[in-house]
Image 1 (cartoon, one colour):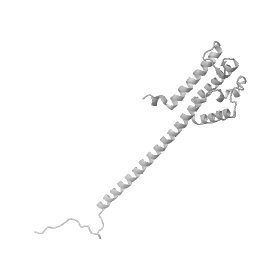
Image 2 (cartoon, rainbow, N blue to C red):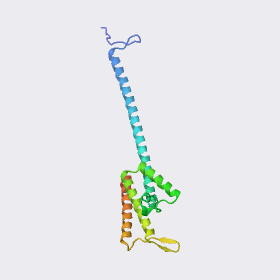
Image 3 (cartoon, rainbow, N blue to C red):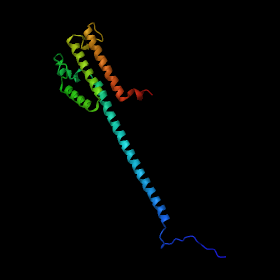
Image 4 (cartoon, rainbow, N blue to C red):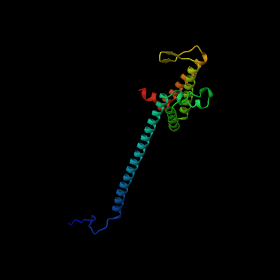
Amino acid sequence: MQLVDDAPRYSRDRKPSGEVMVQLLGVLLGGVLTLVGSLGAASWQARQQRELTRAKDLWDCRAGLYLDLLKHLRGMVSFAADSDPFLVGYGPRSAEDYQLRHELRARVALFASQEVRDHWSTAADAALRLHAETIEGDHLSRVGDQVIVPGTSEDPAYARLVATEEEARAQLIKRLRAELEVDRYLAG
């Protein structure tokens, strides 16, 4: 008995059948899809990283601004002195005061929310009004070279100014902490 070998034989000269071409095409297509998917994922990840970096940079700018607002929250940065005749002369005095007010105003316009702008304006104006009344109303005392500003006063109008300034400052601080999510990250 003779065995017959019916299996197809492949040689260099013989062209692959359609079935083999379909398999090769499937492998190539799978490779291309894998490559495209990998490139897409890498691109998406890079974009996400850029957005996170930008968000962190903006948060840092905002946090720095908000700290500066609190450090310089006094009458010298108020714009009320420009429009209220009683306050003329109590606003910025030196070129440095005007420069500071200008810088803060520019940074506030760029980085602060509308709520912070409003609270900052209110707090700075309240600080200026309190400062002016402290001087004009003679609500301070001098001991040697030291000027002492009382924490309380018998004058109800002055006490209202003190309370208004403290409330405006507290509201500004509350808003700044909320926007920076300070309590969220310090609570743990």
